[in-house]
Structures are given as C-alpha cells and as structure tokens.
Image (cartoon, rainbow, N blue to C red; front, side):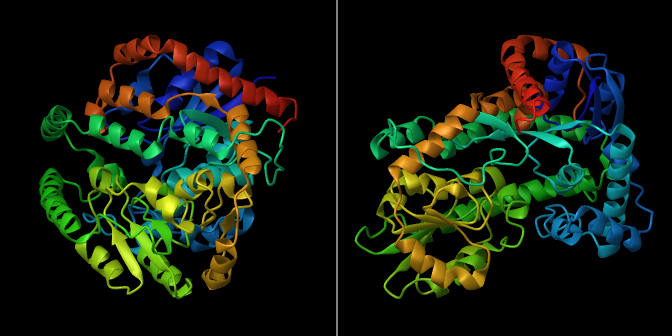
Length: 501
C-alpha cells in the first residue's frame, strides 16, 4: 500500500525539491500545504513537476471577516494538548516585532480558529503516514507540526546539526529520535584537543555571517527593490503577514531601519566593552538574535532576555560578574536592538555588556559557566571543559555537564551546583560520535544561498514569479545533492517501517 506523505511548502525550495525527487524514487502519494505569497502561486497551481494529489494554499483559507470560535478552540486545546495563547503571543507578526500593523485580540483568535479548523480538515482528509518539513520557524507552521505530532503522524524534519556541515532528520527539532539519555563509551575516546579541532572545522557563527554577507549584496537589494516597486502588491488583500505593508509604508520603514541601524551601531561601538578582565570570575550569557525561533518557539516562556539577565544577575554568587555579549548576526540580519535595550542591561551593577566583535571562544575559555536560553554556545562550552545551563529542551541536554532550567526560582541553586560541574571528554566524545553516526554531510545554508540567488534576488524578495522552466533547470543542475538528500528521507521512512524508531 502506498505511503501518504504531506509536505509543508513555503518560499524555501528544499522541500519542493525533495518532493520532486522522492516521487521518482519512492512509491507514494504526495500532498502539500502551501504557505506562499501571491506572485509565486501560479507556479504551484500549474506546475507539472510534482504530482500532488491535493494542495491547500494556506492564505486562501483565511477569511478576515469570520468571527473566532472560542468553544471550538477550547476543545481543540483539550483534544490535542496544544496551548494556543503560547503560540499566539510569541508569533513574530502578532507581537512587538511587527512595527507596521498591530493585530487585535479578535483578529488573532479569528485567524487561529480558521487555521486549526483547516489543519484538522486537511489531516482528516489525507490521513498521512508521514509529514515532511523543514524546521518550523513560524507560528502557524509549528501549529501544523504540533497537530501532526498529536495525531502520531511520523514527522521527518530536516535539522541543521549546528556542527560542521552535518544535518539529520528527526521528529523533533535538534533532538535525535529516541534519545533521552546515553552513556559514554571510553573505547578509543578522543581528547578535548581533538574534539575542539572538530568544532572549529566550520564555525557556525562565521558561516552565518558569511551567509548573510553574501545574501545581502547591494546589487541584489537594488534589483529586489525595483521589482517590489514595479509589481502589484496583492498580498495586502489575503495574506495577514502583509497587513499594512503598502509600498509607501515599507519604503519608509526600510529607510527608518537603515538610519536606526547606523545610530545603534554607533552606540554599540562607543559603549559596549571590547575587552574583558581574564582574571575576573564571571558567568557568560550570549544574547540570542531576535526575532528567532530559538526564543519564540523553543523557549516560549523565556523570551524576555532583559528579564532573564536580571534573574541571572540576582542569582549568581557575590564574587561573580555576569558577562553578556551581543549576538554578532543581530545587526546584519535583524538590525541592532533599540538603544534602550542596551542601556537597561548596562544599568545592572554586576553585569558587563560586551561588544559583538569579541571572540566568544575566548569568553567561554575564561568563564566559569555558560548560560544560554537555547543556543549552541552551551553545547560549545563542553568542548572547552566548561559546564553550562539552558532554558530550552535540546538534544545536547543529555550531557551531564548541561543543566536544564525549568523555573526561574531554581536559578540560585542550579547556578551553584553547575559551577561545581565538570565535563567528561568520554561523554562528550560519545555524543559527538552519536551526532556523526546519525547525521549526513549536507550544507543546508549553501543550498539556501543557491536558491535565494536563483529565484529571490539573494533572499531580499520572495514575492516573485517562478517560471517552471527555471525550476526544472535548477532541480536538474543540483540533481546530485538533491537525490542524495532525498535518499536520506527514504532511509528514514524505511526505518519507521521496520519499527526501528
């Protein structure tokens, strides 16, 4: 019997490419939920490359005059054990990150009522065996994922391992399937020195900075701006992500952001510390880029970073300082934060705010403890023999040197115990081997750059027309890497069939 597989498709080309090569190499029926803007929509309506049995365009199914249904939402929460306000209040379009349009409570509840109803209807109709998706970065995408998980639909999520160029496929983001604990194996264990060499082979932050530098070239920005100005902006009518985004407001906003970024950069360069005292005892807290999934979805109750910093500062021993470092990609990717944000941190007596250019490796090495909400720094700390703490539920939490924080009130006790923690090279090596054995080499960011350049003016504009012949050429050109990636999905499906997962 054919497997039924449903995809979540958006502006990212990767999932469509997987569907294209999957149907050529695996007997299955394919379906798709499509979350895109209006100009690429005709491509998905008319394309002959992937034989989807049925597709649903997300934004065609949202009627903005429809009233919310609280009774339905209440029952939905109970049926599926999904907390809808947690998702709504952390939606980057519904909260403070959206400076162009402000949604009211009725609008938010109306939208999520219709999304929940649509998603349940889709899954009732398809009854899929598998859900194939990239990492769920946005609230509505994550809601569909949670509903699939609630219904025990096997999920195949492509994860960037945040280690070298490794990726793996699992049911949860940044967690291997069926790994709640593990034991280190001392046989042929690598030393900390050997492990650090592996960590440095392709540093994630450096890779992200290079990615964003390439993505944001002046030529691509100019071409994207010209196409935006010359094309119709129909998304205002049916896509709530574009509410209020007429061309005048968008241009005004972009100019304002450029000016703010310059002013904030000046403040950062003049006021954030560019050196630190290596003899001072300190705990290191790296800021997260905002808005970002690692906060809004992975750590939904710990999203206010100033509050978190204050809580940590109140909880550390009297002879310690808290060193806070701005994320190096915050400016290039999102624009630097409001100056008041930095002033609030700088006003805390036992906190030192560090410049984003400071070397995080040196900070980790000199620190006594690393605390992050849900970033890779807490994982990297283990390579430098430093204990760490995290607020999010991540795969590397199985390391005994990593302490998971479940409640703010636990901080004083957990910080004291974590400061006494040690890191085992044997245990870390076992986790790295597990990562190596369960991953495959695939440069996720490199492929993203390729399709951004081919279709989206370097990632600066996604509301573009997509000619089918252009897609055919792209899929053919990158056939080898895409067939390899698809083969990893087939292997994973076969493991599920053998009930090995």
